[in-house]
Length: 119
Image 1: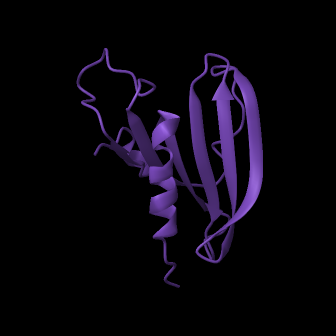
Image 2: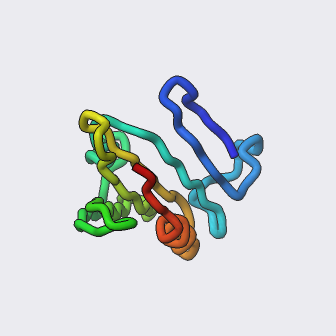
């Protein structure tokens, strides 16, 4: 578990040793899940990471409207993210994303299926 941006409250879970710089989060079998509360969508295309495909689908998570974002970069790397608007928070949303091996993207689905909102 790690956090590379404490000032913004980013929470990360990963299944590799981040101290080994040669290990890529895009290697077979490795993934990182990152969650952060944001005021704007982090899923806006960036010239730093040229995209091959980018799709957005409206979904429901624990009874609330959310957006599923799937991206494939030009180099073949993939990510799956969800942007979940938070109620009564002046436009803030929970952005939760998984990077790395798509074979493990089901883990993010399992995590989201366990969500229960407490208002």
